[in-house]
Image: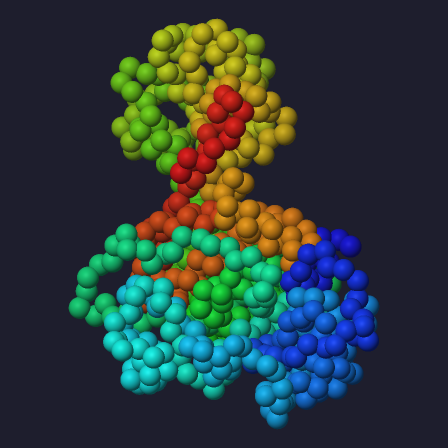
Length: 559
């Protein structure tokens, strides 16, 4: 099965297991009690409950507990005829108002209320009991009594039980009415789930401006519209489905943190959603292309925030739309970060040399402007690949022995970069201490000998970089493999990072979340977020990661 097909199947069937065994045989075991789920999902206008299959449960016992027939379960889950019931698989159960919720055994009693009578709220650092009371519309005294509290004082990350009729659902609206099996629903947490932890964006180091009207009311449920070119009538691209799969995984992990999401997915290939559909959301994530983003921004007409998730060039839209947020960091930020890096590492008297390809003036000029903005003195060496053999002697006249020589390879042409790195390697072997610098494109050049990067301690700036030594990254990879039976691409990482970050911001800061985008830097799995705001009020991400190729052949994320 192709990669996109695997992800589609995993998203629809919600396989939350890895390497499970053969089909369970009900006649060999006594069925275990079934706890009736209260968590709902909407598919094509129909409401379902999702149920996590436990070991030794049978279709008959599940159907009896929910008050449905076995055939109705088969109709809702077409793949069951092939796979049978598998431990930790999530199946859809048609929702019926008169389902017997008492059929399940529920959780152990004690200080925890009975299942279905409460929702959990994780206390944010800025919240008081009165804030939470106002958020849920429940008297503070009721919350205190429900949680056996003697004092209204709360602590950060304290778990409160909020009395409700039923737990807040995570709902996904399907992109296309005719393609139920092409749409993914949310991924609930099972007892074998690995939760990925990322830095808390509400840590105390976040600096907030004090204003008279700066009252923050967070959200326990965030409404998000996801607009992507699903192309449900044909076949979605791998990039789209990977991004979607990563975003769904973020929703599941946020739910485990007490942040619930109502996700409405729209297929841009099927037409432009209406303003009414889009503006009911706290924000819209997507679409991808500049043209589609502009169309959505014109449609919402300022009614909600639109976040650009993937296209770097979409940053131009910030000049026209104050409700626009650019999540990918633009390439110019890499040049500015390189200049900042040089200003920190270079010492007086050390050479700074700019290697530029003849005819490749755009990148060279951008790098010059960044160096001048930092007040750095530099020399420029223009040459073509045909002149490569004569370059070492010219470099020798510009470099100094006994001191560091900082050399920026200001090109994205693979032939030129390969020749430039070869020449820098020659200079290093002649006793010149060379430290090279470049942008992220250099990492993707197959014909360039990576040994040159390590030999010259290449310093790269990049909007994206996955540190595979990170425990959080490895937990994400394991969870992604278990759910989708494939490896996460950079688009899966980006889907996770953008969904997790913006939903968290909206949950923590409520309707004022966009106001706090430029207050702090947040490091996610493969990208960082640190926003700048233009005069129009629109925000764009300026965060860049620094990567160093060490002589010991290691590659290190240093910031």
